[in-house]
Image (cartoon, rainbow, N blue to C red; front, side):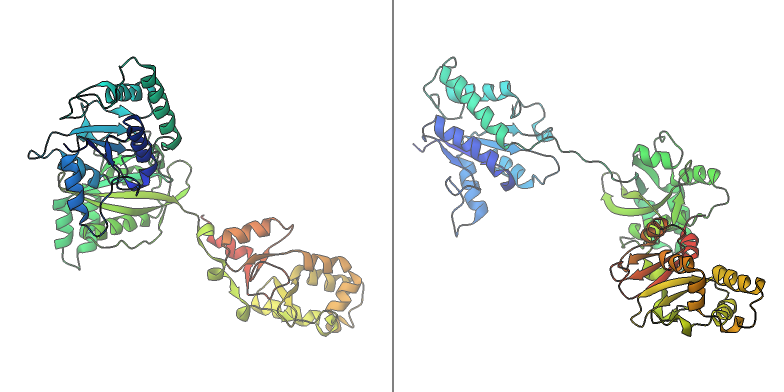
Length: 473
């Protein structure tokens, strides 16, 4: 008569749990029961060079019990379910299926069936007692797998040990997930999707917006997305048009480019095409914070006759989203003076003022021959210096005044010129540039260098005007 066989069905990343269960069986039966565990070479496993499914079918045919190690619902349990199904085929001997529930949930296939809750000591003890003392624990068996009575202290000791060993290898905590950004799930009927696909190319954009707004309904959402539209909750099957109307009521004059961008994404996804992301921002009802609606996942649900779209509203800040390199004035286009430190006598103040006047600039950077920033001269201070000279009657040499004269008479200007600039790395954003500017008193200019070091060559120039024009109005 063949030896009893127990098949441990599990995912290979749950090998440690399966090994604890196999070790318990082997120890308590003194190796009189074979255990098939595909993830452990010291157990019965599929043969090298053999057909995997054939070996599994053979083992499952002879198994008196299949112990299913089940951890989390977010895993693919297709193969384990197949193993349970093969073990219970009508033409195979009777097999007992035992669910070891190691997480918060159990597969619906086992609804109504008493399993083993691996996190519950009483449940584990019940399993151990039946395993060690019941003569019919395994079908086709005629006597208990061990020689112990159900009140024997060895049974309690074995239960305590198995429970303790399981706790050491079970996954820590339940599966948990939450959307990192406001989330809405939209649903569109297959008829509407077909109408989008069938629409003439020249008319499709109009058709998409009409169908998506009127027919797409909210099938799921979180409280954060609801709050974006000023809602404490959403009625069942509220349409995207109704959400848009709520938003439009709060912002009657704001651009609605975001809804066009979202409709375009949904329309492309309905055609089973990759959406085009346009990053059109929507101000939230209430606080006005900008968010961009992005379609991140598409599903066909045949049983519902519909498509589902996961839409996340990502916080959108133009400063955070804009690289400095895309908005800076490149070094080659900067109104800039090259000066060798110590040779400020070569720079005529009146020439500098005329140049600033001609370009309508209020300041001009000075760099050394290696393109490192020396200082930035402000027109208001240059005018102040010339005016002071004129007021004292020293007008004969106004046209010959140099930067050296300025620094000699008003040395505080030199420290102001050289101490009111900030720096940011070439990989930074306008948000980084603004932060750098705010960290320096009386700073209106940020210079882009390779790593943000002031001793590196200047690659570009970001002014306060550039930053202000990129902020939402």
